[in-house]
Amino acid sequence: MPPTRQWAKFFLYSGLCIGSGIIFVNYFVPSDEKFLSELSPELKAKYHAEKEIRARANQLMQQKMKDTQDKPAWLQGLKSSQKLERQILEEARKEVEQRTVAGELASERERLRELAEKEKKL
Image 1 (cartoon, rainbow, N blue to C red):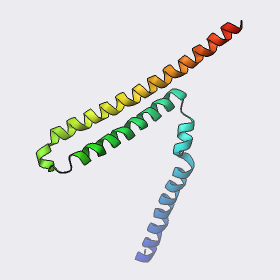
Image 2: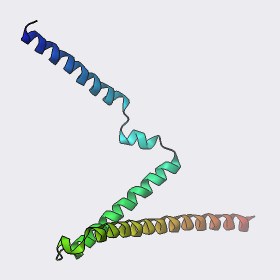
Image 3: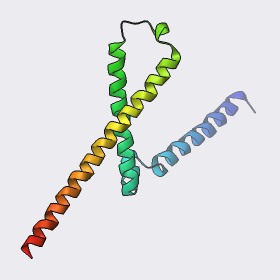
Image 4: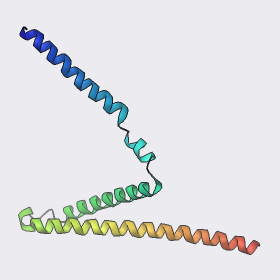
């Protein structure tokens, strides 16, 4: 077989493999929005809470980095950096949990008020 024919077969089969992979990915892998819409309400809430925690931790980390900009990195050390990341993640987690608990309490308080109003009417 001449080398040009071998190269043609190679490109043809390679193109078929790559093209079929692209087609499978486009048709069978759900988009992020579709995936989130199919999740149960519990998992959606957990996903959004975790996303909020990560965003808040990122904000806190950037703030700490701005505060320690004038110090060289080798003076701060690797262990202190890891400890700081854990501490920031815990702070963010606590803040988000407090907000969620406060929101749940407010909704429960509102529900109890509505029940009390209905009871007064009866």
